[in-house]
Image 1 (cartoon, rainbow, N blue to C red):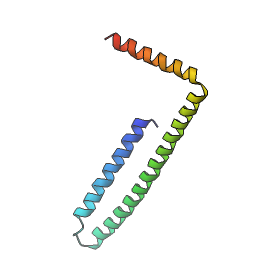
Image 2 (image 1 turned 90 degrees about the vertical axis):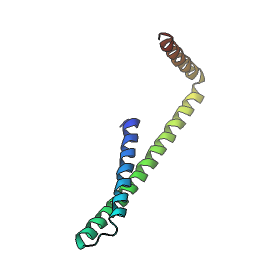
Image 3 (image 1 turned 180 degrees about the vertical axis):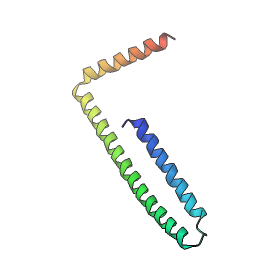
Image 4 (image 1 turned 120 degrees about the vertical axis):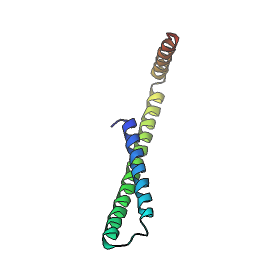
Length: 100
């Protein structure tokens, strides 16, 4: 899954959790066996969703650190190739901007 989709999914999950928490607060004064049962299930689902989001966030952070470490190692192992790539990208961006 690409980073944009992952970020959007995480933001959507945070929104759902926040909305569910607000709903639980709004129905806190409601009485009845059915309402109590539904609130208990919703609270358990929220706990599971929060735990899942924390795991996903930790996993994404670990992957980002690993990617940054790999890039750092590559640049240190191949400094001239890295300079050539950066110069090429800079030239391409300059060319594209100059065409406008």
